[in-house]
Length: 141
Image (cartoon, rainbow, N blue to C red; front, side):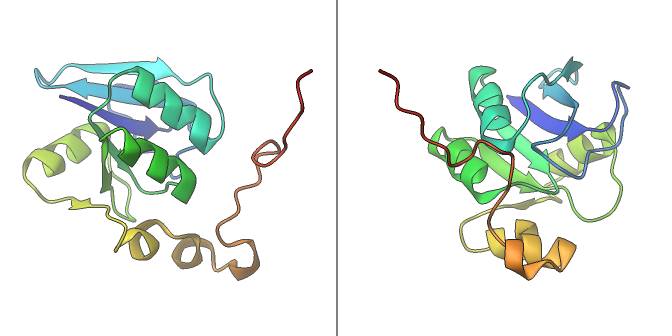
């Protein structure tokens, strides 16, 4: 099993990053408690989600995730777990996961755990992540 986590720095015990799509680094932990830290070249929730899918990730632990990348990950069978609101490091997150202390994000609790309104108090941008290219369609002729 591979567990992915967005992290703030390239340290092997970095704190998890608050934003999924803008995380500069990701930690990938495998069953043998080996952690790889990888620079994330992609930016934006969907592109980052595709990178995790390409890396055969089984589980994502995060404290923020847009709905579209969430749906994309779930469609590939990747489980998403809520890291919580407080600072948590890679090792703490892994321990909490294996101790069944993390809440799995579902369609029912997504809004409560990861919805923007609880985090930013910014209602008029709810559900829209402006990364510049989310909705533009270019005809290729």
